[in-house]
Amino acid sequence: MNEHSILKGIAVSPGVAVAKPLIMRRQEVQIEKRHIDSDCVDAEVGRFRLAVKNVKENMKAVLESLSGSISKSERDIFNVHIALLEDPELVDQTITLVKQNQCNSEYALDNNIKTISEELGGIEDDYIKERVADIQDVGSKVIMELLGLYPKGISEIAEDVIAVAEDIEPSLLITADKKQLKGIVCEQGGLTSHTAIIARNLGLPAVFGIKDIVLASENADCIIINGDQVTINPLKDEVNQIKSDIKQLGAYRAELNAFIKRSAETKDGMRIGVYANIGEADEAHAADQNGAEGVGLFRTEFMFMGRSQPPTEDEQFTTYKKAVETMKNRPVIIRTLDVGGDKKIDYLDLPKEENPFLGCRAIRLCLKNKALFKIQLRALLRAAVYGNLKIMYPMISSLEEVCEANVVLDECKQELLKEGVAFKKNIPVGIMIEIPSAALCADILAEEVDFFSIGTNDLIQYTTAVDRTNTQISNLYDEYNPGVLRLIERVAKCANDAKIEVGICGEMGSNVMLAPLFIHMGISELSVNISSISKLKKMLSCIDTDLTEKAWTKIAKCKRSGEIKSNLNGILQEMDLSFLLNI
Image (cartoon, rainbow, N blue to C red; front, side, top):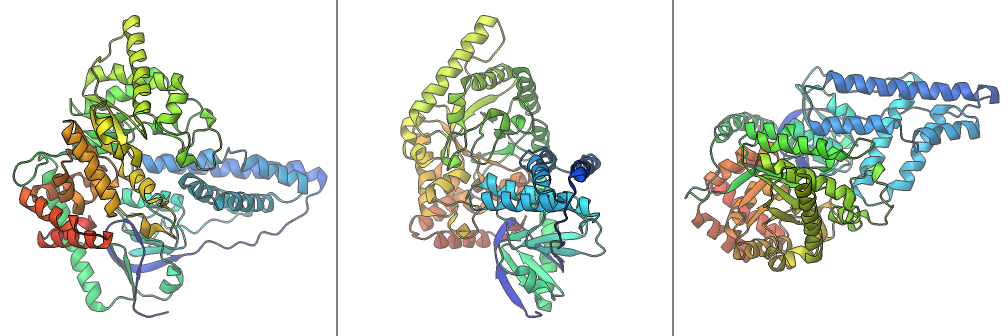
């Protein structure tokens, strides 16, 4: 297939790239069933255990060798895979199959993986989908070890390439040759897949969800990634234009460095807080170095994951104290434990639910497990003495939940007072607005809290009833949906009327096209991933009151999300700032 063609998918990581396609097919292996004599079954189990041990040790060695060059999220993915090699469902069940069927372990493991994938594959749940992919990734490594084969990787590449595959295992991408790999195109995957997260961390342009892209690229000499678009066998003029764009983007990135130390404000002097989203205390340093004016979202759940028991009060206190001290009295908004849904923690023994995203998660879980909640609140109250710490409750759906959480907070204050432990008495408390009921009752909630932070990822998902990882309906997960924008406008108005701060901490905050609307709505802060801080500051420096009014006047008349996006894109082009979309 050598034709010039243009295909569209989901841009899970922004950018442009041009290179030769590197087709990556899953290595097909023939796994035949072999009978194992009864007196040899124990030896076969031993062979399986040794293979698991070797894969685990190899992964730990790779992780250690990469420790200084990969991000926390990449380390977390590696640790998830290492932990899976101790998962009873994967390991113990395979051993049971070997014993019951008196068969070779690679055959038993392969069948076990297929069974698990079939059982879980039909469930529309982010966590489950990622877990299936993780099990398949880890399981294939053990099978290759048992067969004495070595998977084809992308760690040694002789020329610039764009990887093209049905799906790329996260572990392969983490160990890829970062100099020669210029982009990724996959048939499967979505915005929240582990591979997408790693691509964004690496700054690699990536487009997912393009059906039959492997076949379409098979005989191509060159492909181009440009946003959500992939061009197969581009024309010479197209290649030259993309190469020019890439060179220009390099110059733009250098220009954006100047905004790291500048305060975030509009052209006519309006100050807007540009904060960072972080997942561990060490990331506060990176946020500080990249010009963050605060931390708008500290996701504390990562402290609770990948371990056999919850962190102690002193462990949490030390972590929170480190973050607030690093930010030198700038705001640090710390979200209380937000697990459940796609974030499972084995030692919490969460009940199996038909729809965990609508189940016992986040603040609901904490209010049912007040002992766990109190440990975190006490640590936060103590750490607040050392900086500008604010507490934020996630997934609030009613005033009752806010009041009940505040009762627990007051109990913690009384306990610390009796114990003679130093803590901050008047600590600001806010909530995440990510459920439509909270957005619609924002005027009521604003009377009881000190600030709002709009979690747009879940707000879009719950408002539009769309699983953002489902490629069949991914086009409906739409941040330009008029209903979503109206809810955000309402929340901002209620916050402004109540004279409390209102920020955005979801992915919409990083979308520079939406910045004029957010300014007009009265959003006071935007909390984004660390890599987006300088480009958002650049965008804000080009906005003034006239522009935001002009933008809102246009958008308020739009009835379709496509119209809204087109108008905002037009404004960006008029300002000669379209390059920000690809950085």
